[in-house]
Length: 348
Image 1 (cartoon, rainbow, N blue to C red):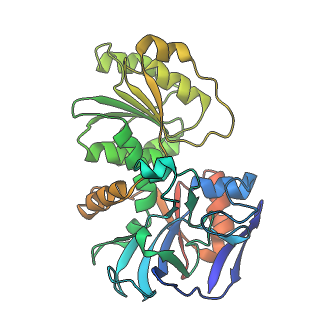
Image 2: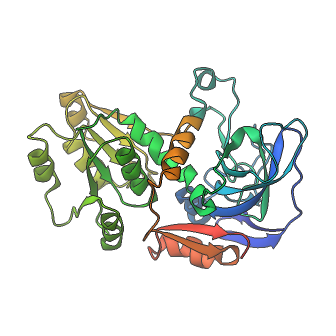
């Protein structure tokens, strides 16, 4: 089969490798679509970051390995002892490996496991024609569920998990910094939770247009006064939650300046460099910075349910490319800003 193999910094090749075979408790998936994540870009251009050079404690794998942790597909083969799924089932994959024994896991927060691993970063992933995963990672999709949408369940679950951490109620005001895929996902999640008053802050014309066409209220920070807008909309209270999906210093500073007292600034961004935090804003308002890591099965199921109801719209921000073009039309196109979200089709 063909697979996008990561060998190191700016070294990904589509090569032929043997088909995987499922062991007991595993399923073989014919991959339909695999999304390129921001973490994949970091690995390609500045990595290895998370891809291990020594055997990972949970997977036993290290580079070189097959990329891809945002994917959907169809079960083609099952290992021994699997009775909860059948060949032909459509599935989305929750690609987490966790120990189940550390204090975080035993407290129920397996998404923050001290040894956490990701299929496609710490084990051969889904940017290939086939992959094998433990059945505990599988989420069954309805028979008529579009499989391109199924590949977006994982990143949208990242966004949904962050939205839940905002502790918002209908009638509250939220601000989302960044209209990339995760920022768009946070907006979709908040709307699905009944939060209608959401301001999206995005400096890119293309990204503003994309999310505005989906129905969002979007603001250009280079030409509009965010603090004045928030002050007027909230009658001076400030935003009840701020979500940073941009990962730049300006978003952190502006977001904390707009935050209501005793409210969360939820960080769901990747920060390439250390960022100074104006703690005085947190102290005076007794507010907090809340990290958001990954997702749980609850987030996956919530996103699948909303998707099945037609809540998510991919118009204007999702593009599909062949596996053979994963570098030029995938990684390079995302880095250069030519595309927003890319799904890789391993059959092409």
